Image 1: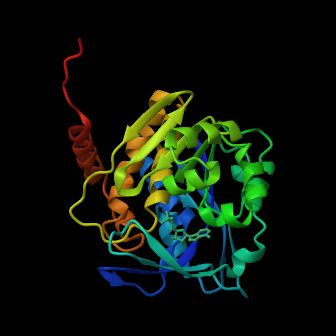
Image 2 (image 1 turned 90 degrees about the vertical axis):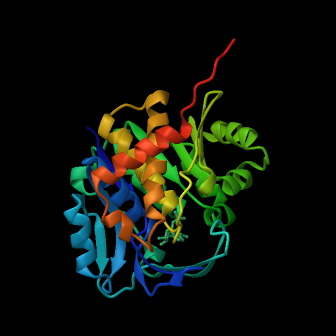
Image 3 (image 1 turned 60 degrees about the horizontal axis):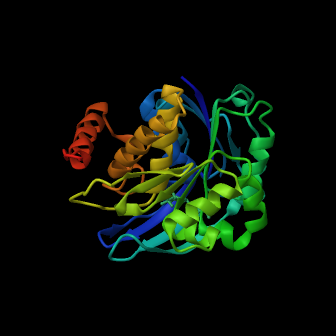
Length: 308
Ligand code: AMP
């Protein structure tokens, strides 16, 4: 079983969907990744920064899931990163209303001593220089480095982003971001171009339409489970990434065949995340529910066909 280190935001989010609205609730990419990966019973830790306004209860909740939070710096004089977004009726698109970097503006990540030897590294969506700084603090290259990013960093820090992309094994991005990064409309061509930038594996997330895994001329596709109720898509991408790397860390196997299973585990966990606002569903999820839904996934994708 591998040790997983996660870097990313631990945040306050205020979310509006067609079904309701929240005040500031717990959010952040690293939070969702950690909660998702914790389902695999692995040793994991988060590197992030929060302000003095961040409730201790949230840290206790993460600790109760066996997530090490010693790498979450608390700047008592500062305020926690705040993001606010509003979803359109299709729930696939959203407008960012507010991004207050606050303590994140001058974040200097420090890898805790007991995670310097991590086997799996998840670079959550953050400034690429922060992602790079974490890579540089780990003397022995981890078995697998996965990076998630978004259009915000492509628009503002493309040079730094391309530098860090050179150093990773797997990139997870959504379809529009893959198009933006590569300049190609076809996702197959986009994946090819992104491969050439560094990562051997390219995962393209397509929201409610599933996810694609590209590697060395091969492609694997996993659908998203058709759900009766989608309440709030926030964090689905991070939950997917957390499930993906969490499964790989728990099996200590980074073969393409195992990555296909990891994609299914990621999609499965993401399907829970969207059922309630914020992290609520991920905080209260049983192994039994996960297993039952995996069965549904299997049924959804299995078919018999005669080949001549
Ligand atoms: P997702 O829905 O998977 O894209 O992730 C949503 C989470 O990303 C929210 O909980 C936010 O706190 C966090 N977030 C939003 N904007 C940014 C940003 N520019 N950098 C890092 N994290 C962000």
